[in-house]
Length: 163
Image (cartoon, one colour):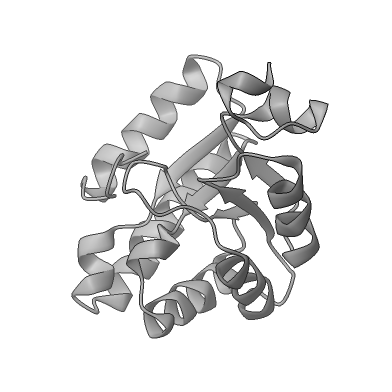
């Protein structure tokens, strides 16, 4: 919810969650409010995410919070992960794929450490082959988000020529 940059109001994102679940969604993807993060408005970030996690959990569904790690400084990533570790969404996800930068091994490993391995990590963005997917899992990801799933399973590079 709040794609692509999490700027929607909390109320709007909660309504998006309700509608998505009414329409059959079992899992919700919600983007952290990047403007609030960049403005260092951590109480707003916490309140916003708490509302999204609560709205999803009240309906018995799972939620992934997308951090857009490529856009965050190390300090911002740390503060966001401290909040997530407290709120315990089902997943922390590296990126939407909208903003260019995807998952990195460093970000996945750091997220695992900061989240104290209490929250599953979904590495998403730029994972196009088996070696990359394996490395992300070894770094701490429990899920991979990719548009190259068939090639990865077949052991290919993810390029269309691999088919």
